[in-house]
Length: 316
View 1 (tube, helix red, strand yellow):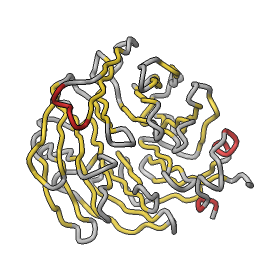
View 2 (cartoon, one colour):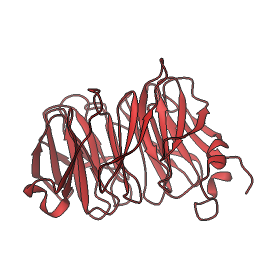
View 3 (cartoon, rainbow, N blue to C red):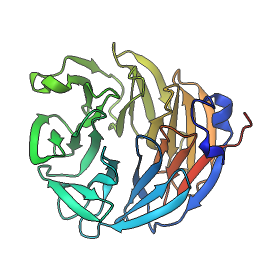
View 4 (cartoon, rainbow, N blue to C red):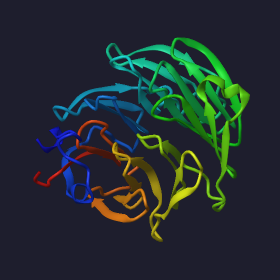
């Protein structure tokens, strides 16, 4: 069971990344997986799919645990909350509410209504029960799991939002502009710093902080930018797309030293945070819509319509 190795025992290196191979493939879905998330301890994984299903997997045993359906509203942006066996997910039809679901008894605990168009991001605070959402309706919203009432609204052009790993700061990426950083406790006072990112007119697809909080990653279908989160300087400008490939999703490794990106051609491409390519992983037949590195185990999860769990084959 190579995937049992934690980061303490096996350092993530270029060589170990290049040694990852598909250890297990799951075929629960009839259509594309559109989001996935690990628990903070890395022991469970959940996916959402355009086939209106949520699937729960155990990372420690490598087994499929359960399937739940959201037939009426669909599902996207599935995220584990801090409570065991509860998740948030976005809607793709009917309305644009965010839904708070108990996996244990397949029951909705609460709905969060306010957005008027589809979600672009959903980010949970690592500290507490607050979360951020952003939508094509040109708002970002602040919520608390304990209340259906929206706690605050930011107006910006089709934003993306993300908490940093300390839960003290959040970033908003604004289409056609750049990145604004807010103090979580005083976001209504406006951003404490803003970075203009002068790079083309492509639409931002995603926004993430590295685990060490030092890097902000922004990506479009064609390139990935890594920004110094304190100064806003571009650390790496990764022109990721070959003529035929689009970037579909991107993620940091937990050590904050490498970046993975899924592509429309079915590969997972990898770079160090200086922007140097460290190779690609092949195994998917269709576009890799989602890719994540497990926060605690040596495991990559990626999804087309199938879910693949990857493990390193390198001897220690």
